[in-house]
Length: 192
Image (cartoon, rainbow, N blue to C red; front, top):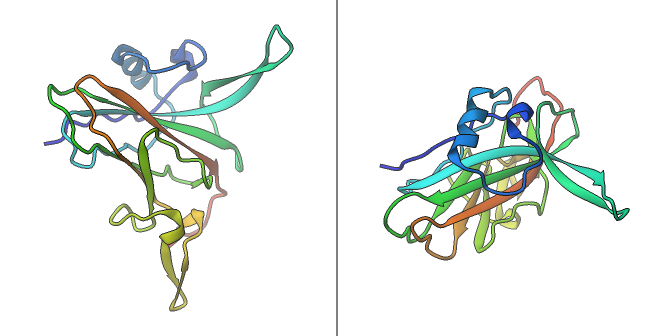
């Protein structure tokens, strides 16, 4: 049975400042307690001992002493239509044995549209789903039926992102995957 931890929210008040890397579980537990922004849980795709967290952040530029702007990631509290959010999935092998082929699957949050080319994961193959996570393919290979004809799926139809790591994950090893998404306008009916 997969041991999955999901991070379902964040609050700037408990973040303690700009994000600069993976934090301990205590930090995330405090954030869960004061959560105000719901995020979808990422899935371990039946990978035992894969501990995962999902963060939503905005990038801001702060003028540095040297005159150059320094980028910082701050937790998201509100998202305006068209605004871009950076989602980071952090994962770690909490078990005592190596995970041979780790797979991380993350549903796209409601009303968010994937930004093409933004999904990264060091040493990972990135694929996408348009059918609720039942099947995955590279972006250029995702097809949908429109009026009986098959065409390449628009990013608005993406439902999930999957990262398949190309190397085993040793006990205690950590990693991350990241993607960007924009807030879409509300629709009267869901995209199908």
